Length: 107
Length: 107
DNA sequence: AATAGTACTATGCAATACAAGGTACTGTTA
DNA sequence: TAACAGTACCTTGTATTGCATAGTACTATT
Image 1 (cartoon, rainbow over the protein chains, first blue to last red):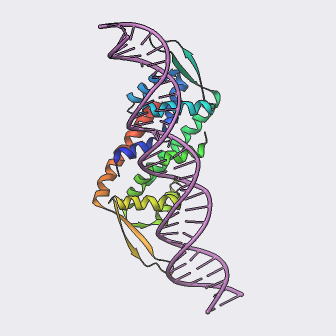
Image 2: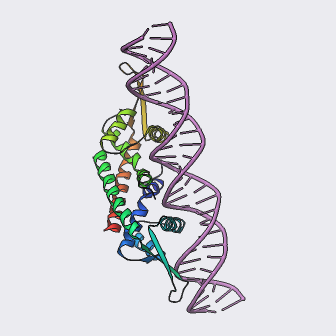
Image 3: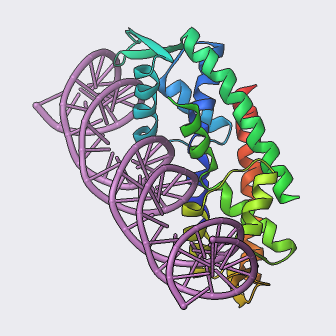
């Protein structure tokens, strides 16, 4: 039993909630998302976030547009769709329920 | 994106915390654990809990003893080890940190 | 031209919850 | 006594997702 591994397992399912929530505030490109998550102590790596963003896009929860950056490679700006917004509210409830269940079990 | 699947993903990593916590209160056999979790709205199935309990045992976090039951098949009573108790405290911290990180990201 | 910084992509792996199928023990019923 | 029901434990293959790793590509600097 390895604590780092357990942390990674705990992140499963949670990250899409966090990302949808971030993007419900304003659109952003990947590095911005990564940095914001990092500031909140949610460490996520590229191998995780790109496929995750793609999955969310594929399922219609996000859309994106390309924008040339000032002096670097082009960036992919993501934004949440109305469907994504609905799903986000479900996830918010789900997370609350899980917190409640864990609280009840561990105290 | 399927909400039921997301719920299952969110449970990953969390269940060992809940089970260790349950057993830190008193020893219990599997059905008791399942029922207690169910009361807290944490639905877990046999294919999950038996391998999980075995993993925790293998890693030295739990021990067990057999006890004949009153009129049914024998039961395996699990209890937490001192190592398990230590790990539990780490998990408690980890869960709190995750809650905090998610809170910060989603509000 | 080579290097550095930045951004995106793909893939194989590890881990775990779950579905499904099974074995085994005890008591009850036909 | 055999069949059935309730209960308890066990196993395994699958699906999913975070991660490590390896790469491509764009722009600016040296």
